[in-house]
Amino acid sequence: MSTEPSGKTTRDAARFGPDDELRGARFAEADLTGATFRLVRLDGVRFDQSFMPGAVMRGVDLTGADIDGEITGLRVNGVDVVPLVEAELNRRFPGREQARSQDLAEQRASLDGALRAWDAHLERAAAMSAVDVSVDGEWSTAQTLRHLVLAMDGWIRYGLRGIDDAFWYAGLPFTEYEPEVWRHGIDLAAAPSLEEVRAVHADRIAQVYALYDDLAGTDVTVDAPRLPPWAPDGLVFPVHRCLGVVAREHWAHLQFVVRDLDTLAARGADAGTSSPGAPTAP
Image (cartoon, rainbow, N blue to C red; front, side):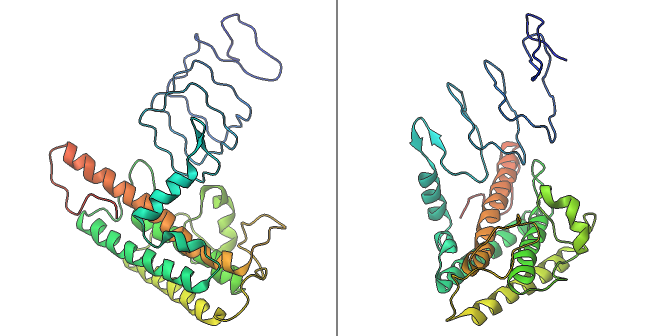
């Protein structure tokens, strides 16, 4: 067990001090709940698929930090920055704000806007020969479309439509659910062609629009008949919120794939090469 400079350890927690060499250490599925970091160097550290609710940072240097995730109640120097971030994202992605509306017409218009923005992104990615390129270990554009198919299969086909055999074999799950997808006939090793991915995505989008038509004029504030199989037991969502996941997911993941194309374009420019496609976010 690593020790503090005094050489002492505690019975309930490991302690690491200046004599411990932890550069490049990898923590995978480790539970660091309640850990304390004081006067530590975290230059270039990367957190992927990690949970940090209630994290407290005092006197830290976050120069150049880059954060993506589910962020609520984040205060920076005493200021709740989440409304500021949301306002800027809504400015960058017109139509995004309506994705959370209880009004199905507004939701549908938001999805329309998201799909138009996705079409523009796909054109740009194709021009850069980057549809299948992963940036810094993130999903490629094609992989992201496969994840969006899985989301629609779970929330729309399985949940709202009640289809038991709802899942496409090549849908991509979020990391925590990977061990369970075999139950739904999903193959994590699948490698579908881009043409197949786009065709299945288009089919699922058509099913979403058909559901908008079917639900027009109905009470969508009632509880959904069921949620995706990954939802915790006892969780209840109204119908409109389940349907709205489709638009919200398309906007959220558009943000990530645009970010990655911008990164590729910037790296090409830094290397003194020309990168096809416009290197700007919408």
